[in-house]
Image (cartoon, rainbow, N blue to C red):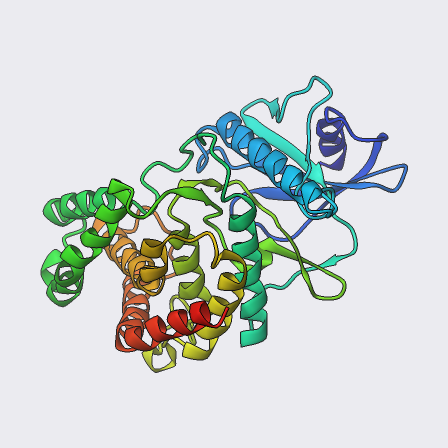
Length: 362
């Protein structure tokens, strides 16, 4: 296996021959490896998941154009573009990827002397996570080139509700009759969620460059604990910046697990919300427009509602999209995410006040 990986790595324009390739982490989407050369330099080698990313060439073009822009902005500010942004390593033929059979491979420079975290365990770390995503968005706030839509329908509420209506009507797994209460959760909030989405469709809430996978493990820190750069840019596309904020709150501020069976453990921590919001607005507060600021808190409800809908829809469809560990796993996920949504709704005014306080205190 390593021999095959070294052969694949040899197609990329590394500074010296690759002498070893070893697995890195346990990625849920891509297979990731560290390739080392005989000069001691290291690179990230990834097999891209073309089942999820249907157009890998377009995805790699998005990443290259975004990282080029980031490097220009970092250089202009006197920073180190080789450490503060990902560096794509092309093939020796100048391509952004290498195709081996049906597999697409890509390489980037390994950024040395960094630290990372698997989860935000306290408000100070949530602050750093918010700062990292806010910084990423700020540096790209003047990026005007079109990006390929590599995830069609992603966070598109009109698209999701069309899917939802079709799923309920088809009732493929014969479960709709037992889900009257849960279906009511979706229908009771449909109009409010579409009000928000219509502001995105009309441009009142603008589209910007967004990351779309904002977990803290996708942020690298320097050895002093300061935010260095955002990595794993496969999901970069043009969307509302509020998607990144809302999804971050859904994960950072949940006191329980996404699929927690004990609903008493599930709630939104206002303390974690405050930490993330403060970090995010320290970087993003100046470029967000009024409509974005006004809807920042609501975006957490929007994204969490979407996840309730998607888990329940998959349960209705017979569990065909998300991997499940037991027969009612998607229903358990639905209930846990709905409990989180209800907690957000109960604290919504406090969330809005927190955003306002952070904005006015800047």
